[in-house]
Image (cartoon, rainbow, N blue to C red; front, side, top):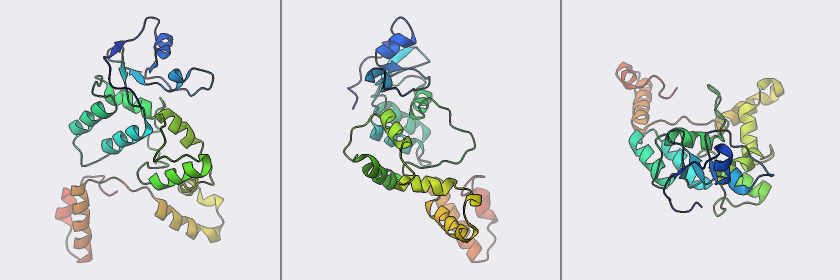
Length: 233
């Protein structure tokens, strides 16, 4: 776990290389390396593009997952999300561009492919991730101390024979790669492992009301008017 928050420090003279030597990292790609010092590969401070200062972070994978869970919560207010991120991940001293900095860090510096469906969900696939780490690496994620970037590297290395690997394969396997007689089973598995869309409590209530109206043969126009365009879709 990261040490308690310290005063934000200016980037050392000499730019990126000096900053890396100081254990900080900017918004560039977080390249995993076995030939560089661990403090460069697994940073415990991030450099803000807004002011050029290094801000200490808590890079533990559980901290990052807790922040991601709250940031993806449709029932949580945007300001409350940022306050949580600033306190939990940035140890109470967040930079002005904390959202962008956190996003770059969690993605390893790589931009997410726009429009591509997710291959996994950290909350929905939690049991599969846990079982896969125990199966392949002998790591108990309930007790392990792992830097987020180390966790990401191990996650990416999970094989297809692990519980998570099976889920990802089912979600991505083209019908053309499956014998016609097995496609019905593939469809059932896809439905079973499908990643559920996150919907707010209010939208869930409206969707239930919509189902009730449709089952009763009533006009659902009033419910449809209250639903957001992407709700449940």
